[in-house]
Amino acid sequence: MKRNYLDYLKNALLFTVILAVIGYAVFYFLPDGFYTPTFPFLLFFFLSVSLIVHYLLIKAAQKRPAKFVNQFMLTTFLKLVFFLVVLVIYSVANRDDAISFIMTYFVLYLFYTAFELVSILRFNKKNLNANRD
Image 1 (tube, rainbow, N blue to C red):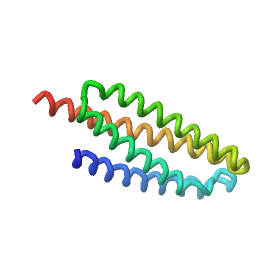
Image 2: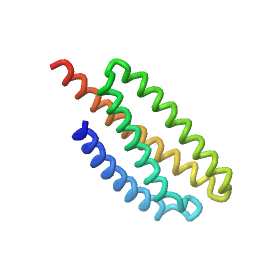
Image 3: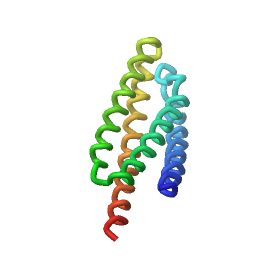
Image 4: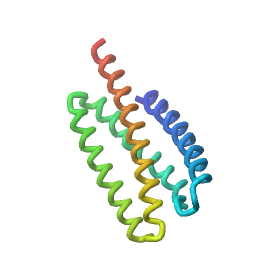
């Protein structure tokens, strides 16, 4: 488990750095109204949640592989609700930055969700193959 999580941590950090570079490049060329000052914090936020969720899913897969799908669905649902709550609270509290924040948040959500999904599918495939042998 430790090896799988460390590999994920390394890949997630690299992914975040790549997103940061691309994000700053995009924001450099866009007008000022599109940049949200929360961008660096959003990267850290999505990275943190991603690391926690992946850790929980790895533990769940190792405890009860048969119930992994249920754990995955529950974790994904709770994560979505949590993300929506954060999005709504920030947008209501900071109406001036709401549109750029929501757009940035949505793009980062899509990228991190795709990254997490690919990573957990790879892990699950390895885990299934290891259990068969």
